Image 1 (cartoon, rainbow, N blue to C red):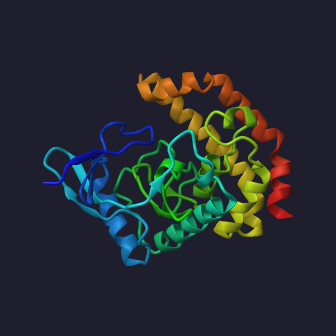
Image 2 (cartoon, rainbow, N blue to C red):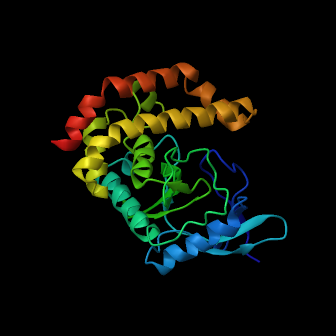
Length: 265
């Protein structure tokens, strides 16, 4: 039997994800009965850049195919933050959405609302395309992993959530704790939008949706901290507490027009 290897990264399921040979074992989400058919349907519709479900174990874990490549962990190295890498993230997300648009959402399932689009939608969004959930090969985004937060929403919501992590849509002080110094947020937001292929109408909406997504993410952290989640509490403490969130939200509102100009001109 292949030796078990712990996989690191992310803030959910910390210390509970393992690779054994060509399989990954991790805690199964409550909606695995609907999520697994969705992942299989993505493959049937041409999206081969997501794990393929293999089965569920008797002790409540799921088995998925392992996707080889490199995954960024904080602090994020320069090679993951190039403009070419950013553009490839946008292109990969577009591919996911094009395939996902053809997959019917199971409306009987209770999809997680933690990071979900408040407006809802007819397509499943990943909702957590952070650096730790993108597999790279040869400097380009090659696959997406960890669909635990997937829920119905607008494609633009997924773009906004992705922008938060990859541009990143953070004030310079906050960004400097995890990202290379000197990243040009307006220019990088344009690169992501170009990689995805946003329309002019979607570009005009994006800054406002990013602000809305930031509010949802703050509410998510607030709930986790209130529940005593040690990982979220530690991250909150180490990264500047609630003052950091106040600073980010003020910065986004103050620079809304700058982002709009970068996206549309």
